[in-house]
Structures are given as structure tokens and as C-alpha cells.
Amino acid sequence: MTVRIGIVGVGAVSDYHHVPGIRIDPRCELVALCDPNESLLEQRKSDWADAGPAPLRTYVDFAGIAADDGIDAVIVATPNFTHLDISLACVEAGQHVMCEKPLGLNFEESARMYRAARDKGVKHMTAFTYRFAPSMRYVRHLVRSGQLGEPRHFRSQRFLDWPETSWGWRQYKKLAGAGDLFDMTIHRIDFAMDLMGPLESVCGSIAQYAKRNVTESGESCEPSEVDDWSSLIGRFEGGAVGVWEGSTLMKGHHNNGFGYEWAEVNGSEGSAAYQLTDPNNVILGKHGGTMEKTPVPDEFLVAPGSPRPPHDGVPSTVFRYDLVWEFVSSIVEDRDCLPGFDHGARAQAVADAVLDSHKKRAWVDLDLDLG
Ligand SMILES: NC(=O)c1ccc[n+]([C@@H]2O[C@H](COP(=O)([O-])OP(=O)(O)OC[C@H]3O[C@@H](n4cnc5c(N)ncnc54)[C@H](O)[C@@H]3O)[C@@H](O)[C@H]2O)c1
Image 1 (cartoon, rainbow, N blue to C red):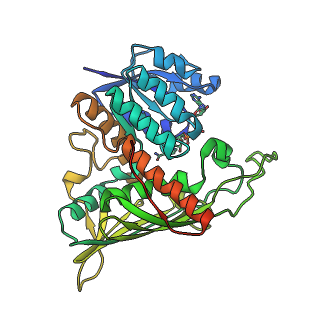
Image 2: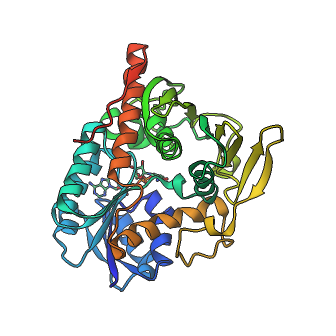
């Protein structure tokens, strides 16, 4: 069986890792594209022709993708405000769906997407990229196998040095939901819960640094409505605690676009840290010792079964191709996809609670029930 994939939204992230992921997976092929930007659609049709049988079918409206019975699975990589309607239409048509994060504009939307996919019996995946970093996979193994002792503390920092010009759709609440919180920190909320278990309460704060009322080409535009910095402290149900912060406006942290990322788990017996910029190594320490760089063992370098050569390409980029591998694996093996829409919805419940906490200046208890 070859899984026939349609992509809705042919912008940056589809080009960066979804299409390369399809190219290296012999079990799937790209068959159709959808985007209202017709010139970009034409360009992608030719640039991505090698990812499937020619010619790729193109649509300017996602209804065309949902109605195309030559499509088994869909990747939704559009602005956040469109995820709900596109995913619901494809799920209703019986197509498996991988949707970009944040899953929706809020928890209600995301939980609705989860329930629709669950009830229809299709595979569903939230594109939480960093779960697939080799070092993150290995840290998860260390935590789950008890090698750090009882997990007590989680910390994550994500700093990028992006321009202060307009962020396009990403800077308006109706289109994006929130700024850095929904764009960056939500990934770290997800992988923290994957490592430490569910959160039970959070106290959060956000800040806006830049007006972003000028576009890259110098034209004026409506100012940004969203956060440039997001932070939270949280308590996990299992008793551990966590600290997160992120910003896209940290000068000096450009680093060829990869910025700075550090996440660590401290347990009762040892500590382990992951860095996006060095994803094939972890930093490990045991009680009484020193944190030292250690290679990730071979079995964690790629998704199980993937033919991706583990040492080819830029390490901070190539692990992202494993998302498509997981999505297609869940379809051909007929099993749940990880992370699913349920994980996307729960991370969004936490992110929503950060906004609520900031507004109320108070701790917020979480209800992660998806109905
Ligand atoms: N997982 C990750 O690491 C990661 C990285 C970057 C972006 N993202 C997420 O991916 C999504 C897209 O981000 P991007 O950076 O590619 O944005 P982008 O603006 O580069 O691309 C979005 C594309 O969607 C198209 N589009 C808009 N409305 C549409 C509709 N109704 N139907 C079909 N296409 C439509 C636009 O024309 C554009 O080509 C966002 O949700 C973002 O948060 C995730």
C-alpha cells in the first residue's frame, strides 16, 4: 500500500521538512497540493514534482482536497485560524490528518478536532517537531527507564533573534491565537508533559517588546497584538515542577536561524539536558559528578525503521523528516500516531491557561479532559 498524501498550505514549513520527509519515505507519495496563493502553488508544483507521480493535482480551496478520493492522508500546514475547518473537512472525508501546531486557536477548537478524528477512526497527529530530536528521544528513554531517579524538575529556554518587522498573520490574535506562546513555547509544554506526565496547574506571564507595525519591505501595517516573550512555572500531577521561557526577540541568539534551545530534566539521581543545536548528543550528569556531553546511542538517532541516514545533513534540520515517518507508520501499521490531536489539545489547554493566568495574575488549575 502506498499512502497518497495531500498538502494543504504550501508555505515555509511544508517546504522545510514535510516534503523532504515524504521524499525519503518509500511507503508514501505526494499527490496533491492546496493553497490560495496561486503563484506559489505553481512554483511548488514544479519544485516538489519529484515527491510523487507527475503531475501533482492542485487546488486553491481545501474542499478540493477533501473531495479528492485519491488522497489517503493530509498534512495541514496553514495559518492557525484555518486548522479547525480544514482538519474537520478532511477527517469527515475519512482522510488521516497531520496538523501543524498549535492545533487550533484555543483548547475548545483543538479538543473538537481530537473528538472528530477519534470518532471517525482516522489517524491524527499534531506536528510537535522537537519530540523527534534524537537527544529528546534519548532523554525520554532515560526518564522513562528510571535512570535519572524520580523526575523532580524540568527547565526549558528557547531564544531566537528574529527581525522586529511584521510577523504577518502570526501577529494577530484572530489569525494566530497568541505569539511566541503558541508558536514556540507550546512545543516545550508538549515535550515536558511527554517527559514528566500531565501538568496540574500553571502560573504564566507574557510580554510584548515590539510594535511590528512595518513590513519587511518598509510598508506600514496594523501593529502586533501578540506576545514576544512567554513564560510559565508549573506543577505536574506526579509532584515535579517546571520552568519555561521563550522569545523570538533575544538579540545575539541568531545562530544561523537555529537560535538557542536548552531543556533539562533533574531527577533524584541524575540530570539530562537536550540542545536543539546539538541533537545527536545529550549532556548527562549523576549525583556528585559533572554534566558531560555524551553521544546519543544509535538506536535513538532516527525513528524506528526509518531509512534516513542518521549522519547525513544538518542535524538540527534532518530529524524533522521523522514526523512524516511517524504519520505514515501509524497508517501502515494501523496504530495510534504519536503525538496525536489529544496531545495537541492538552498542550493547548496549558497554553490557554498561561494567558488566563497572565490576565488574572494568579495560578490556574488545569482541566485536561477532552470529552
Ligand atoms: N512544527 C514546526 O516546527 C513548525 C514550524 C513552522 C511553522 N509551523 C506551523 O505551520 C503552520 C504554517 O506555518 P508556515 O511557517 O508554513 O506559514 P506560511 O505563512 O509560510 O505558509 C502558510 C501557507 O498557507 C497558505 N494558506 C493560507 N490559508 C489557506 C487555506 N485556507 N487553505 C490552504 N492554504 C492556505 C498560505 O497561502 C501559505 O502559503 C502554522 O500553524 C505554524 O505554526 C510549525
